[in-house]
Amino acid sequence: MVKSIEQLTAEFEQQQAELNKRVQAKQSEIDVLTQETDNLNGEVEQAKATLEQLQAEIEQAKRVQSSSFAQARAKKVQQDALAIEQRRARLVDILTDEGDIGATAFAHRLNISRGTVYGDLKALNNAGLIVKNGQGWEVTQ
Image: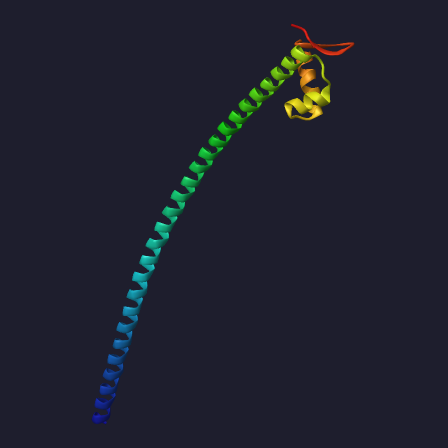
């Protein structure tokens, strides 16, 4: 019986040693996984910071673009107003020099539509620069 207890003790110690090796191996795996998790968490935090920075840059770009667009729009409006003013001044010059030559002739000369000619004549009339008489339009000044 003593021998069998010695055998059991030896088997127990052998199994305990194997379990200790397994526990150590699993602990090593856990340590590696913990380190990998920490590394991944660091990368996630870095990615979040990069994302926040990119979002801020996008917002800044949108503000700049919006501002640039507004400036371009204002410049276009100003250029269009100047073009209209110049076209209407040319229309008055033609009326002064040649008299009323008709909407079609005005349109051809100014490279615009007849509708635009009529709109310009109306605007000039409203401004008191031209009037319509029995012969057509004439300059008032």
